[in-house]
Structures are given as C-alpha cells and as structure tokens.
Length: 380
Image (cartoon, rainbow, N blue to C red; front, side, top):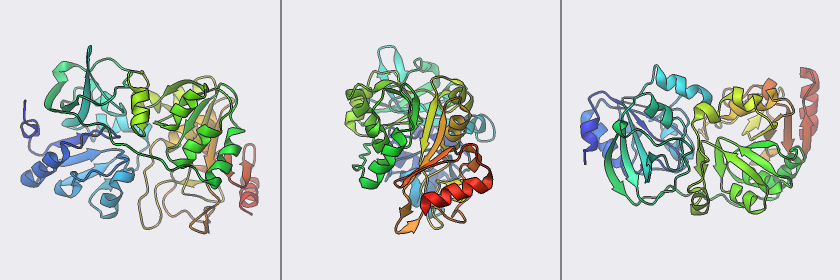
C-alpha cells in the first residue's frame, strides 16, 4: 500500500473527513507528519467525539468549518480556528479559497465499489471535483451512502482495518426536555418533514411524536430507530449518522445519506413538500429572537452548522415552521438574555416559534415590539 506521507506534498492543505466515521487510525500519523514537515495545513469539520491522535497544534495552520464536541478543547486552547460558515456555504468555500490538496477519509468496500460509511457531508463534493483521497478502508463499518460508488482513480488506499465509527450515546431526556418535546410535537402535522438537532432534546422530540413523519435533517440521531420501530418513520434523509451500534446496524445498507449540497440546500428544503418543521435548539436567545448556538462567553460549544439553513428553510416553506426549542434556564440562569454571549448564529426573522418547558411563543405576524412582549411573557 502507498504510505500516507507519499500523498502529502509540502505545504499541502489536508482535509480530514469528519463525523463519527472520521479516520481516527490515521490522525496520529498525520499529526506526526505535520510536526516533521512544519508546513502542513489542516481543515476539518464536525467531530462529535474526541480524537486523541489528532493534534491541530502540530500544523502550520488548522481550521474547522464546524467544531463539534470533539474539537472543543482545541478551539478553547487556540490551536484551531473556527470559520463562521453555514453548512450550505461550505461546498463553495472548499471549491475556492480553501480547496484542499488531499482528503483523508474512511471508506467502506461494497460489491459495486468504495463508498462513504456513516457520513457523506461535504466530502463527496471534493471527490467529484477531483481532490485526491487517501483512504483507510474499514472492513466492519456500516454503509448508508445513497450515492454512486466513488471513482477508483481518485482513491489511494493507505490502510485497511476493522475500525467501527465512534459511538455517541445520548442520555435519556429529563423532565424539562420531555415537556419541551410535548409542546413541539403538537406543532408537527401528520406526514411533515421534521428536522431535529442532536442530543437529548432531539431524542425527546422524536419520542414525543404521535404521527407519521419524514425525517429530513442534517444529522440522523439514534432515536430515529425508535421512531421506525413505532411505525412512524415514512423515510429519512441526512448527511451524517450519530449514535451507537444500534443506529449503525439499522442504517447499514439503507440509502440514507447525501451530500450537504443537497441535504442542506435551503431552496430544496423550503420548496419541497410536505412542509418542513425545523426544530433547532439554542444556548441562548435575545429579546428580538436572535439565537446563539456557538458557545458561552468563555468556551466554544459548537458551530454554525446547519442551524441557519434549516431555520431559514422552515420559515420560508409554505405550511412549514422554524422552531427554536430550549430550556428556560441553564445553570440557574435564564436563557433569554439581553445580549448574546457570542455573535448571532441565526437571525430573529428566521424564527417562527419559540418553545420552552413553560409553553410556546408564536412570533409569526408580530412586529418587533410584539415579538419582544411574547418572548418576555414566555420567560415571565
């Protein structure tokens, strides 16, 4: 097999495939190569689990388009720069100013060729545009890639192993998440397309649904399996899977995953029928309905991701909704704040409804003063 070092030319910008299937077995070698060379640059995306072998500080420059929980300590330490870019804009960025010289990714072999395992995301677009791939082929990872096999000429296999995707277990929803989810579920009509955020609240929302739905989301959480077992899942589309082996085994062989060029396209999301109910969460919201999902004043919690894409699409979709669901307090402090801790992630005019465990504030058709009053009453 070709060595990874042979594919990384001096000064290269290396893109590290993200998601639960990120090639963790190659990151120690890649980081060590960066230390020796001194001129390599790194670009990565959403890593939901920490990767002990990845050292962004070893690179001459390291940037991420969506940090995720797994990169939080590197961001807080200043070793990794977070780019303020929504997911739907990532393909244009990677086709231009930040076009990588090499993509390092995990692939799986199927009878018709090599495919992506638990995420397609922005990586397929790079391959189709001619960016070469250094691949570790997993013999045990699932495959939920809905696209065609990847072109053999673009791929150099540098390793094969039995690594499975990272498992992300979500704690059971508590009474606050359950109460919020009940309010949200009442807003979802039968047959709707639903987008949910990862974590306990997203799981609670899918668990609270009592009508059949289509899940049209950036991420498919493990709770989609429960929805299917209850006979309420009509179909599902996403760019990433995030869960445990139960989800991955369920997804294996199903054509669920597409590229962000399609999955996160606000025009598709807003124009397609049935209506889209986008259910996003937030760290905090201000009296004008502006949302922060990126972090506190002292620590990065996440990135922009698909939050503004889905919120905008939900608010534009005939019969659809853009819902922001969050607990009324966090750490004993209200999540409705006069001034956000970080820049605005999603604009207030892309928010239709705000839900807490206390109830619902429907902001549609209200002027700014009325919106402020509605939000104050919900937190009052």
